[in-house]
Image 1: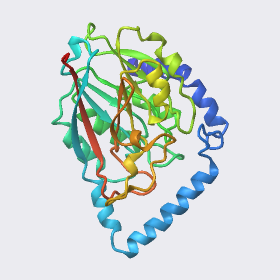
Image 2: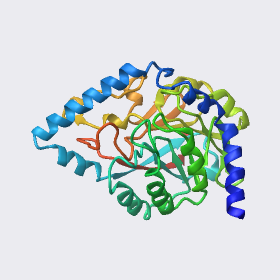
Image 3: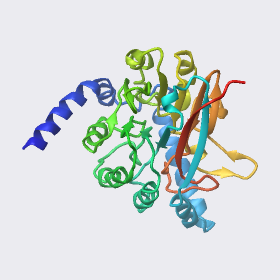
Amino acid sequence: MRNRLADLTLTREMESRLSRRRFIEAQNDRRLAAWGNGDFDSLRDRVASSLLRTGLRIAGLYGRGIANALCPVVRRLRLEFGNLPTGLDGFRILHLSDFHIDGVDGLAEIVANQLAFLPVDLCVLTGDYRFKTFGPCDEIYPRMRRILGAIRARYGVVGILGNHDCADIAIELEKLGVRMLMNEAVQAGAPDSRLWVIGVDDPHDYGCDDLAGAMEAAPPGGFKLLAAHSPEIFRQAAGAGVDLYLAGHTHAGQIRLPLIGSLTMNAKCPRAYTHGHWRHGLMQGYTTAGVGCSLLPIRFGCPPEITVLELSKSQPG
């Protein structure tokens, strides 16, 4: 009975934070996309994926693409900041994004096995837990439970929603122990670490992001980490004093060709911000290639990615 009452309290509290997203979902968010990613874009994507699937099967490459999608790599990066509080020197962040975890069978088990050997201080999830943008989510939760159970983060897991997600996913992930941020900020790490994680709702399709409102709780002197599903609000983030911006959404193209790279990044921002480590003014950012796949469960030249970022205080001179 106590667990049911706790879940009920949690659901009511989450619903108040999800009201804006619920409204947009009710108004058919695909037509009210923040960046104009509406019905035409969805139709274009479906046609393109169908043609690509057919072409890869004819060429005998579709199975290889699926096999590639089941081989995540662990990327480690050390980021230096002159203003990093001393207590955060050496702080390790596990960044996971774009799971689309019901899109590739076996991926959850593989990722969980790798995470079990990656002790960190904090885990940040930057959205897109389901494969499609509609329909039931029942297959997501057992797989996400397996992944979350393998994460070894001393100060827990925080997360946000992506453009593939519905509001219900936030409620269920909080029940699984993730602190879901809906345009809000929380203090993370040790009490004296001065690390603040600011999480905004999806800026790509839903347009529910409220960076100014989210940052109200973060004190001026703290180190500010922004979790946003896509890198598209990099200018606003830098102007607001964000120190580190973590994003996903682009999948780094998912299919990257030799010499050419990816054909599309599906983000309204310069290509330099759509993959890997980048800088904008004093702010640094990392856009991960993501754990899963979108549209088709395949990857070529662009393996799925588990990212471990270590914060370091740069030395003067």
